Image (cartoon, rainbow, N blue to C red; front, side, top):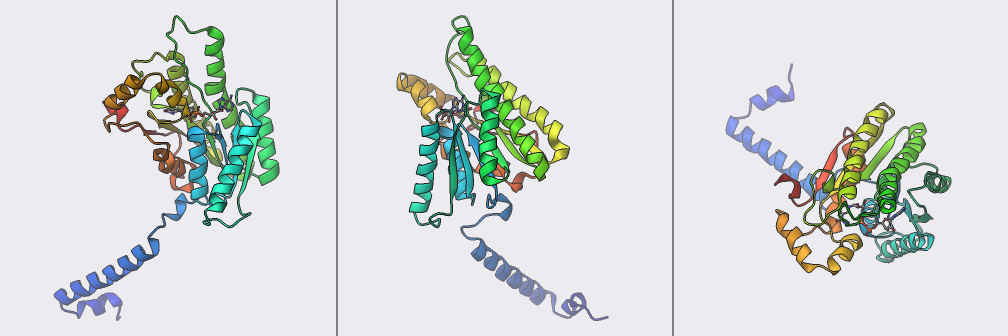
Length: 305
Ligand SMILES: NC(=O)c1ccc[n+]([C@@H]2O[C@H](COP(=O)([O-])OP(=O)(O)OC[C@H]3O[C@@H](n4cnc5c(N)ncnc54)[C@H](O)[C@@H]3O)[C@@H](O)[C@H]2O)c1
């Protein structure tokens, strides 16, 4: 029988090799040409409905930008104050539709008020989002606070508030997300922890914060196992020191602290919120469809030394 393979045996080997390499080269260059400016389709957030808590500013807001840049057109920005959530939604829509990259009227971005430390409030926020969008595919729990008190000085009501937001808020968000995702075939939940889940930050004292983030990290692994067969993935995104309002407030009064943090970071700088975009899209999209219970640290190498 005459086959392509046997036909190739009739060609002298040097010519065969150069023909093969020419074909491979032309295939490669056409693939490269087509792919320029694009990425793997599995990273696309097109046709996915996303919800981000703590998204009126800071890292949560940056995650929203990353989603829109990756093709998401249905997005809920959830934050404590209604006017801030709605303003952030309007700003994002105006920015992306105004720069000509997205057709006017094609983005549906909602601003929803919610205190994540209240389960009833979280349930209401998800109800509002699903009433508008019909379903939810990817959720990021970014709402969180940090405070610096030494253990002896930390008032208990403040410690309790911190756990209510950072730990219980993440739990309520994940639970409500999974309740909505399971009947629709699954989804992806990203809990924002911190490198503080693993290391003790110095020199500032923040024991309850560090413990809250360790709780979030293990919560993600535990929920991942509970919901793995239901196709709901739960992962942790753990940033190092990033320049946001949260850290700027701390650094305003202490430039020396910034220098210390930079010196302790192998890459010698604080992170830009943009540095988290790739990681959040990886975890929220189908690119990570066999990844659950994992942590992605984005910390400039802080935790490895
Ligand atoms: N910035 C960093 O260096 C850094 C590093 C590691 C981890 N993190 C974590 O990343 C997350 C985001 O931090 P950030 O730097 O963007 O902070 P940020 O203060 O800039 O933003 C936090 C957002 O959460 C909202 N929020 C606070 N309490 C809330 C509540 N009860 N309900 C709903 N929303 C609430 C705030 O209004 C705000 O919009 C936090 O969980 C934080 O612990 C931040």
